[in-house]
Image (cartoon, rainbow, N blue to C red; front, side, top):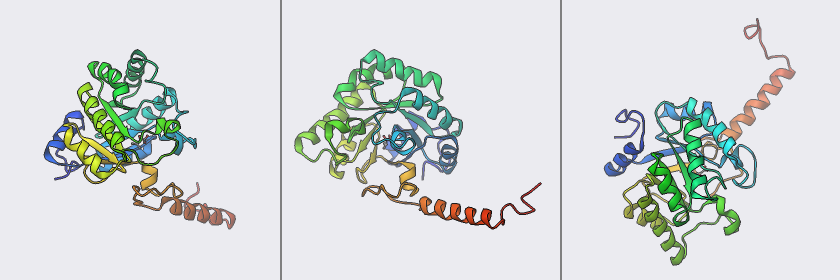
Length: 272
Ligand code: KIV
């Protein structure tokens, strides 16, 4: 029985808890625009993340750090207009929640007031616990993000997997438990060994959603442009290409150019 079988109507935090209890895997993809969101939602995706990966994928930046609150809100408004069923979660961008708990609270509130999103996502564990508590106490669902946290790239120095030493693995597990205690309704676990993701997923009652974290998470997320093959230069081990959209677009554009040049387009039928 899949979550897209009509068993669930509008997806909420409760749906995710129920899915974990029943062992139904959660499907999640990113989106930054109206049309993509509409297609993902109609296909039955459970969760749409307006990821700050839009900094890389949409804006062409090296990192996610330049993304602003205004940009996240702009994209989220477009996304939610296309969604009827899936839960829409919004990444809180770099420096929108690190300054103080009050600042984090204010910015999470702003996202909820100005968009029709269902919740926010923050990167970090222990260091963001107070912010997570304050935001969830106000009734705003929070998704945590542990393991590789792209907003900390300058601290890491590379996008290599995390949790490969005992010390780091212990810290990731401890962060997961702290986030759960602070009120997070789910956790993204990015690029850690499968066995660690399994251990975390078994240790918490809230659902875990993996990216490069193996089979044993309660759900899986990918960046849409990666799985659609739009970004062919980016092919880490954890990405599966379900389409080769870059090739299809290239073929279509080349055909259009030829048709225009030889005056095959527009035809009479395509004209007024
Ligand atoms: O920003 C993003 O798209 C993300 C996913 C990779 C989980 O955080």
